[in-house]
Image (cartoon, rainbow, N blue to C red; front, side):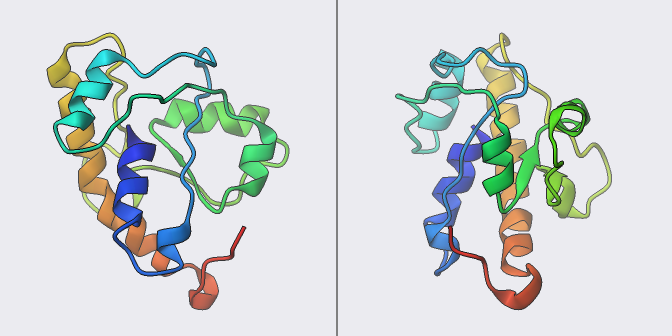
Length: 146
């Protein structure tokens, strides 16, 4: 959900942000699985179509090519730090740039009721402006093209 929401928000930004590609990958997911029905419904309610999404596991190639790696939880970040070589230099929690107190983690709603997915969606949406601001302020004032 985070990748789809962030990609949607970036499309409304000026270049070069608009052209960034957001990819989703899990640290312990089964590759090839569709998005859950509740994830599809939660995003459909805000006008985003998640049908056709297929899960995949994160790879070193993805990490090496990433401008920014966003993790939902500390345990996700820990898994990447343990397995990646090299560890991506720009790896953060999705809510890390908000500057607010409270948890920086976004709990995984997998297997829960729709309301948990909607709460997760809303936490992700709240963090997106701070991610876009961070991307806009990367060193050199420009985003490298890939």
